[in-house]
Image 1: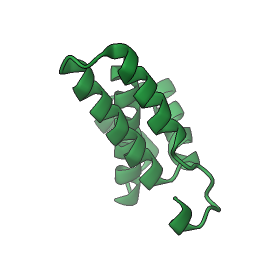
Image 2 (image 1 turned 60 degrees about the vertical axis):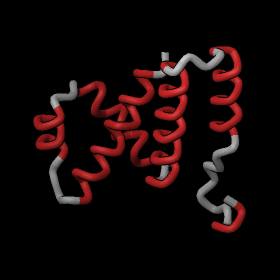
Image 3 (image 1 turned 120 degrees about the vertical axis):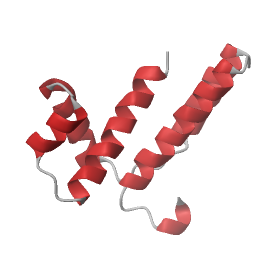
Image 4 (image 1 turned 90 degrees about the vertical axis):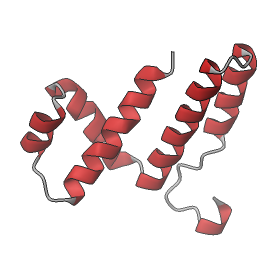
Length: 99
């Protein structure tokens, strides 16, 4: 259930890394083998969310996936996932010490 979201955030991180290295959009699409639709969705998210937020979300999703596969109570896990994701501050103007 969480696997597609993990892949999406991984694509976003890869796009950000490739862009920081100076790769063009067409080159990133060719190497990543993403469809035009998926690439555009991931690229638009990459432009709207800061890298540290994306990394935090990715880490939370990976942790959830691990716990889910380790046999934790699925109802409790979903509640915990929602709580952790809601605690992320997406306001770019929030001072660092409030994050």
